[in-house]
Structure formats: structure tokens, C-alpha cells
Length: 350
Ligand code: KG4
Ligand code: ZN
Image (tube, rainbow, N blue to C red; front, side):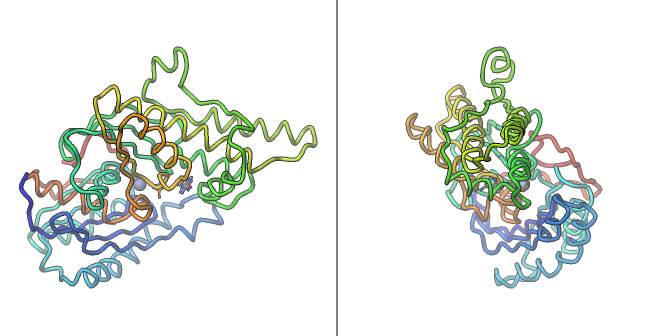
């Protein structure tokens, strides 16, 4: 594959992070992120209207900071990539509009790319080129998907995904049940380290019998979340103390066991020796440890980017944009809109 020296600008605004990054020839020159996350703690969730306004406020300062850090100017940019979906309509529209305007003003191509695939693509900036085929697991607050990837720009097959809650979402809900601050995921993770993961065995959805056969690569976390709620209710009714750390540990174990079990199976059944994990939930310590442990036993390599590249950022979009450029993919037309539910297999929007 040819390497190209084009300078690619990546823009990410699908949720609450305004991310702008610059990549040249697989090298990340700058990656700057502004977030409106702090504004949502009192609501217990993201407010799309607030996020859209925050992107409008932050975009130009974030762009300027990225250009300055990379030591380049807008005139040096050869291609502009932005997240076209999936995500929230207002936030996506801000980023795509900005990207189109820049591409038009600079007379350069525009690529409206898939956020989920970006979560995988970013790993190339850290660990180098991908193998010929591999399995990707994208886990975040809104997504849990298992992908078979033969070409990051043109051949992505969705093997399965969550039927209900995403992994991060389930953690945030259990965080609320345990009285922890929003977003609960990192707090539950921290608490789990103090608990005994074998003290309470919570169910692993879709991992046995007919459900497993029908949903070989799918996940379900809502039953697990309900099981945690029932367990807490039972203790409360009996006036017993709630062993929060053991609950967090048992719950974390169930989620990690489900995610890793099916991801490893996907590698084995599809002859892949590499598993790439991305998305904000890959910060989860139990997921990381269990993936390493089980993969090592089977000779599978696990690639997980550093945490700052797992949460939403511009680098993931610049990485995927760079792949589009070096693979000679046709740019997106400038009249595309955004696609809040963009299918996992669509790498670029047209
Ligand atoms: O990818 P991300 O930053 O945003 C989305 O696109 O959703 O993912 C954030 C999600 C949140 O649900 C957060 O609670 C969860 O990932 N999370 C964690 C951990 N760090 C973040 N969940 C469990 N353990 C963690 N260490
Ligand atoms: Zn994401």
C-alpha cells in the first residue's frame, strides 16, 4: 500500500467532545479536545442542545490550538474528514458543516466518515498497520459492536452487537443504583477493584442454550442490570448491608466475561490472530485484564490504544480520513447530511 504525505484534518463532534486532530503519513501531529461533559453531571446525561452550542463555541479555538500544536496552517491541509454518524444530530451537524466549509474554502476533498470505525482506526497511529484481517470490538457509552475487518475503508462486517444497553451505559446505570456520581462507569470500575468478583455471580446474557445459538456474537446487558437492581432491592428489604464493592466486582466480571468471551470466539471462528479494542469503555480495567489473559492463552494479540485515544477524539477521525486518502477512496459529496444511525458497515457517507 502506498503511503502518502497528505496532511489530513480530522473533526469529531458526534457527542460531547469537540475533537480536532492532524495526521500526516500515519503520524499524529496534534490532537486537541474540548468537552462539555462537566455541564451534564447535574442532569445525569448529555443534553444535545447544550452539546451543540458547546461545539459551536469550541470548534474554532480547538482548530486553532491543533494547527498551532502541529506547527502548520490551514493552507497546508490536504483533506478534511469529519464524523458523519452515528451520533447526535445537532452535534454531528456542527462538525460536518465546519468540515464542509473548510474543504470548500480550501478547495480540498471532504470525507464524512463513520465514528465507530474511527474508534478502531486510531489504533494504527499507535501500534502501526493492521494485519490483513482482524476482529474489532468497539465498546463505549452508546455502543458495543463486534466487527470483522478486512479493510478499514471498504470491508467491515458487523458480526454482532448489543441488543439493548451498551457496556458503558450499563455501567452508568449500575453506578446510579450504587449511588455513585455520573458518569458511573469509572467509579464502578474503581470500586470493583476493592471487591470480590466471585462473591455474587450475575448472569451473562445470551451465552447459553438457544439464545447463544441465535445470538452467537450479540450482547445483552439489560437483564444483568436488572439482576443487580433486584439484588440490591432484596438486601434493602431484608435490612441487610449492601456490599457495594462486591456488587461492582461481580457486575464488572459479568460484563467483561461476556465481551471478551464472544470477541475471542469471533477471532477463533474467523481465523484472526488480532483483536483491536476501542471506545471509551476500553478504559475498563477488568475488560483489559481479561482480554489480555484469555487472548494470550490462544496466541491472539490484543491491541488497545492508550485511554486518551479510546474516548472520543479527533485523532480517530483523522486516522480514518488518512486511510481514506491513502486507499484512494472517493471523497463524500458536499451535499451529504449526517446519519445519526449510520450502519456499522458504512465506512464513509455518500
Ligand atoms: O466512548 P465514550 O467516551 O463516549 C461514548 O461515545 O459513549 O465512552 C464513555 C463511556 C461512559 O459510559 C463511561 O461511563 C464508560 O464509557 N467508562 C467506563 C470506564 N471509563 C469510561 N466504564 C467502565 N469502566 C471504566 N473505567
Ligand atoms: Zn465514541
